[in-house]
Image (spheres, rainbow, N blue to C red):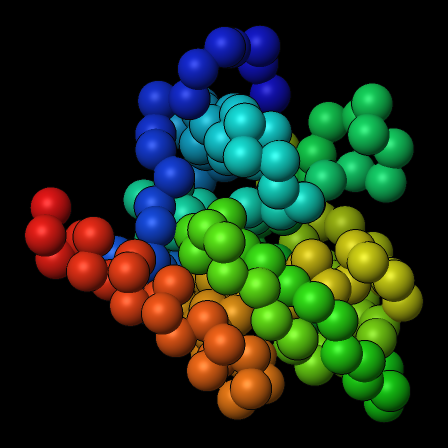
Length: 175
């Protein structure tokens, strides 16, 4: 990824339609993909996210970034990722989303998961986590499949966030 100061893309906010679409696979590992990864990194940093998916930057493509374990390291890029080997145990935790500002809720997910993806050079790799990275990967994979945390959170949390969700939807319809 290159050093640039401002992203060329903007953060997409619910209820924009692209957030509900299944993203297309990446076909070319080229400069356009690197530019997208740069923008995702800048947007993630600017909005203090732990991860960000291409649909959140207006691109319906199967790529996401997740913060590295060490905050000094650049985020990890996952191209055409696949989740597998889910743990039998699930845990609930509070999740938020850059595309749903001010909205949080409890989401149940498998504690651990493995992920196989490609890097920006087209090299395949596999990682496994039973901690926070596993949750981030699953959250970002949901974005690639058109699923949001409001689809996964407990009914009680959906009700608690109903007004904030309605305000987001009205802001878009009035724009």
